[in-house]
Image (cartoon, rainbow, N blue to C red):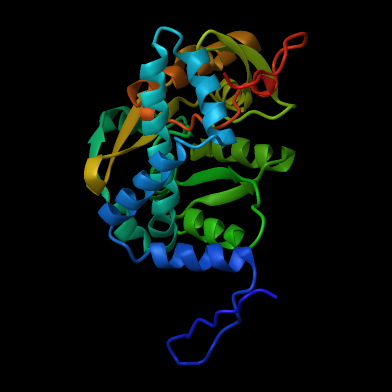
Length: 314
């Protein structure tokens, strides 16, 4: 029988007992929201760094991805990069409570530097709408929150299991963003928003079986989403990549704004997907240690090629 812990509310009345893993995760999230960012990042970095030495699947996946994407680096350098990357993965987990649960203004105060802000301001000023691509680099949640505070933003959202779903929904909406489902109805909502000359947010580095094509990514064919390209082609809206860099020692975040390759709007799907991946590579090479290398980005290879993550670790 699981141990039950009653959390006492402010009015000294107990709320429901914590007897599931979801309840414990929710409690940990709320407690982490009270920690100063330097403390959260220090704890997260230590946890991720220690995990990078264990024989776990995330380490195996990261090693395969880094070997594929950076063959010019020797094995020792790639291992150091993997350890730094997993330290940032730990920071991402540890900072989530503060990013999701604190007031929007307080969270945005953590953005203390911006690089090339004039790029996004110029693109918005053209009056053609705006496609904002936020890859899984650094703190993409704070990048999205900043964008939702500065533009009428619509972005896709896939429901998450358990009570975390409500937390993420409220967090991403509190800056003013409108969340739409990850289905054809959601795509139509994004298209309507762009035609109203508003902004939409997309993930440029997550692909589904449908709405994707194979295109080169760090020299390997990768299933690449076509949504951003189709939206850009149909509306003539510019695409800007937004990256939330974590600064050292929990000092906050620096936002980077990077213009997407114009060929992302090409009517040829292969050309457009190649241009999208080239823009994504450019962002990753800026901060390779802050990218999400534990994600199985090559899990669906082209026909005839074996799945790389089935390989035995050497």
